[in-house]
Length: 107
Image (cartoon, rainbow, N blue to C red):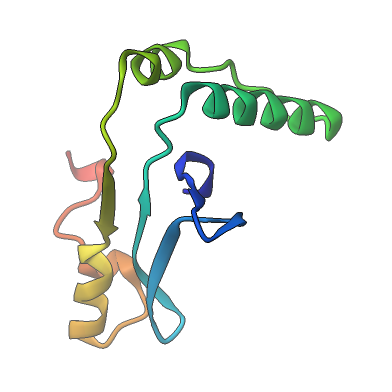
């Protein structure tokens, strides 16, 4: 989620984020949230220009996100772990579907 992460303080050309892999399998990713509303708005506008120039659908800017950032978000970070991927390792399978107890079709 580099688009939502702040720039690395030591190197502004890098996102302040990481990914955790087991072999070729991504298990987790984490990042320090971008809390600067103006920077987030600029990134959204650049993304819109890039997508429009490539003939791709151009999503609207999430004004609620920008408003929330303007209201003030304290420094924060998070990590998302794919437990289904941990189960894949435990079960020694490369088929993620085999790790799920149900599918959307079974709901």
